[in-house]
Length: 404
Ligand SMILES: [Ca+2]
Image 1 (cartoon, rainbow, N blue to C red):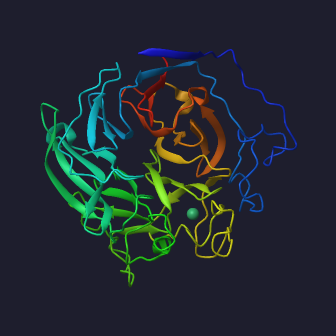
Image 2: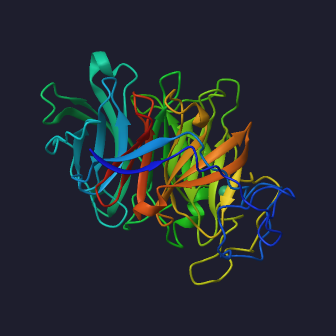
């Protein structure tokens, strides 16, 4: 392991109030974001929805680079023994130990279409992994007419050189010839079902399908371990709605995590230019894309009617403008740095840092940027069994943040 730097507790955080930047409570510290918004004409729906007060970790901790030997890592799952199973976009897995030991490529995944944003994507392990060695993962399945995101389950062989007994349990519909916005993350509920976040494939012709519940594009889905819809017996089936749809109106969700106290699903999704979002995901709710958004087209044009709010469409808990491009998210649940307890961490791709969000109930109360000096596109972030925080980057690195 290579030690990168050491933050000392003696660096106390105290920021002078800046009237030009403090868009929140008067006297509160300035937001960490100081750049001009992509869409300054849009105003938040409530105080604290964007550019919240900046905060700073006061606990001393070290940052270590665990490895730089990964090749386009995409997501990571902590194993009960403390190691991480990591997907590599081109179609293989690796096993990484916190001491820096990295396995050879683990084969056996189905063929993937790894062009653009496709490939071998999210991975999670079975709640009974210790006894059944089952893993669940998302991949871009190449088929006639293009590709689609699919969920498969497989068994990790004892010798850890391959996965076996691969079975595809869910395929996103429709298939599309494109290479953007697959979403692709999985998270187990405490009941043992799977949330699956899907993207809307980006293009003008597929984008409206985030609002079309006969398709599974741009949705959060809830399925069993065999891919069946998990419905609420107390809710009547909605017409023209696939039963596995839990929520709709998503653009490209790359981060989902279950809140350790409330049990609710939190989500981060890539917005257009100026509209990256954090949402709390609830059954039957429409999260707005592309009807409402705080972003604009990359061309500078407004999206749709240029609305940020509309009845029937849920507001994000928090948004970033300019964009930071959120990847994976995780709630901190370790004892290593008690100051971080139940904070939400967000991997930032274009922002090239890890975001720490201090929460107050269901609101964001503070924001910090970590590891900015590393200049890495952070793809995913997760908890280690040792109570430390881990993150992977597009350049093939894994970092560990924690106290010795
Ligand atoms: Ca939204």
